[in-house]
Image (cartoon, rainbow, N blue to C red):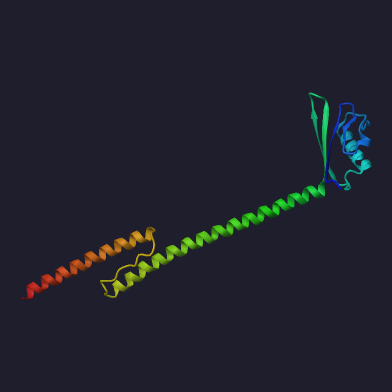
Length: 173
């Protein structure tokens, strides 16, 4: 069975188009009140059995130029089931986007943490007196700039230490 139906009624209340041709040409309402018209539309749908549900939503649009009203009726259960399906898809998609974003954030944080740990571990080795220690460059990120500058600094420190040792050697002889 159909889940919705669309039909046209002229300004005098005569049915111009309808899925069941036996009803075309019938006068379906007398009064001009909107509530009466909507009830007439509902009665037509019930009498014609084009929709099996009694729980329907009726919308109408009056076309001033031609004096006709386009009426659409839809089974509310079907309408809301479609809305709930769309809502479920939206929620699942949203959760997937959040999960993907969290994975990217975790990857970036892990990458930075690993680079920072590498620099800090090398600093601890230098702190213990091993002045030849250098940071191993594994990434091309902001932390690698710090590591490169640390390595340059340690090179200069080693050069200065060697110069002091050389000066001390000359002073002792």
